[in-house]
Image (cartoon, rainbow, N blue to C red; front, side, top):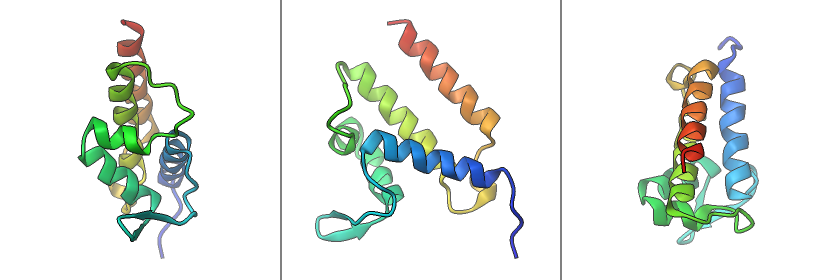
Length: 111
């Protein structure tokens, strides 16, 4: 039996971030080319296709004005994916997640 740790909270944060950026429910039915996918699979496929793939899965209500905005969204989704890794040992701790997000916010603030 697995023990409960803070890695569960990290997982939840990752799923919530993916849900916020895509506008899709993690429990909803998602299909890509007729193949059913989880939210994590959808985001992973999008990130692996680059900025065009990320743009295709972002919530249309999100304001993405520049390529830098899109790149930041892709970076956040990549962090979210790492948080939602299947194995708890493969997930970062929240300190590392916070550090990554703070670095991104400083880069965005430089524009």
